[in-house]
Structure formats: structure tokens, C-alpha cells
Length: 63
Image 1 (spheres, rainbow, N blue to C red):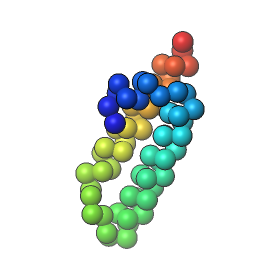
Image 2 (cartoon, helix red, strand yellow):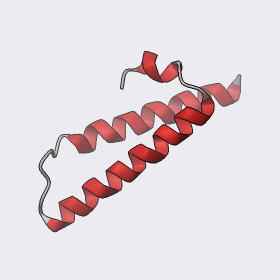
Image 3 (cartoon, rainbow, N blue to C red):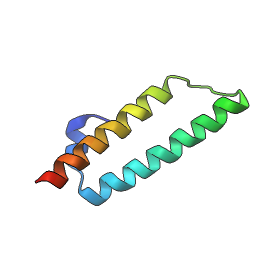
Image 4 (cartoon, rainbow, N blue to C red):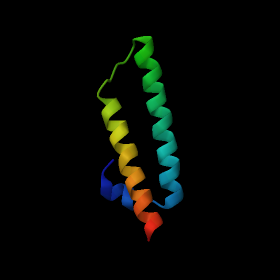
């Protein structure tokens, strides 16, 4: 997701989005260890999205 899209979300929506991305990342990791990863580029994308969300959450906490 783009940073502008994430900034428009509320605090609760960001937390829900982070949880769903963490679940997706864990599913990808299970697939990695089972040897059946169809989209290996998704690891980096999901991790970056989680980091973006954490950054925005920290910024919103400071305000």
C-alpha cells in the first residue's frame, strides 16, 4: 500500500491492517518451510507494509 493511503486510515484500522499483514506473513513463512512459495517477492512487500504501518502508528501516538 502507498503511504498516503495508510495515513488516511484511523488508528483502529491500522492495527487491524497490521494484524492481517502479520497473518499473511506467517502463512508465507509456513509455505517457505514446506517448499511451496509461489510468490517469493511478497515477503519483502509485506514486511515493508508492516514497517510503514508501525511508523504511522508511532507518529499518531506522538500527536
